[in-house]
Length: 144
Image (cartoon, rainbow, N blue to C red; front, side, top):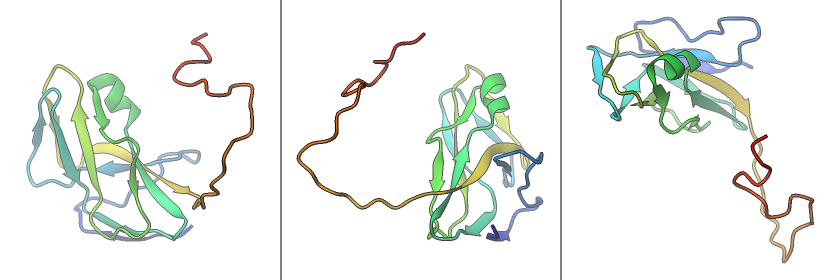
């Protein structure tokens, strides 16, 4: 799939790190470091603008290493970039740790996954088909 991209950052284009990678790393494109204090959130710009084909979205997801080691995650994970959005991709980061986190220019802050999606048309009915699960949710299937 070809996707049009404008790169106004001073970094290379996002790319897949391995042949089987689902996501491409997004880098911070900032003029000065950002100190993200515990429980603070901020939007970090990437300098990237994309034009997705209709029927696709770009999902902005956390990087597992940042989340596990530093407590840094994407607040609205996954964030969605719609096919008709033409603005700069920004990443809403939140610091869930108890220590300050410094975001540097060029730092890999999130990953971008391109995904196809369906558009639904509602069919209003009076009842739904029965299943063995029924109305069970929010842990109803147990933890083990």
